[in-house]
Length: 93
Image (cartoon, rainbow, N blue to C red; front, side):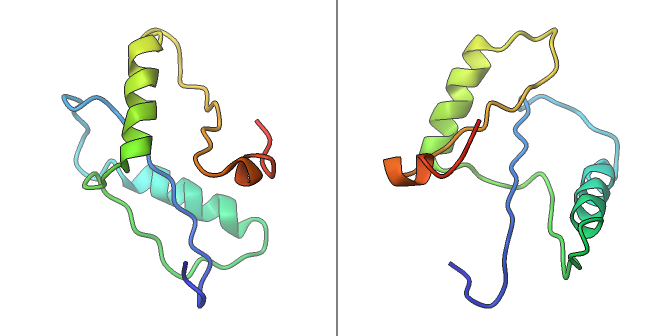
């Protein structure tokens, strides 16, 4: 855990054969920055790109989601929680 900065992490997972236009990461990155800054909090840095990895637990959840997702409906975030029961009790779906 970083004690000098607060770091928010978001992982977007898509099928391996997905193709995006060059520079496609700019709109979601810009949207994330603007959304944080409208609360009055200044973003110091933002890092993004399609080279990220999943933890074992995240990959298990993604595999389950991929098996059950309706390819014709937009993604609706079910708020996946990974951690202890105490952690889970502090979040809401």
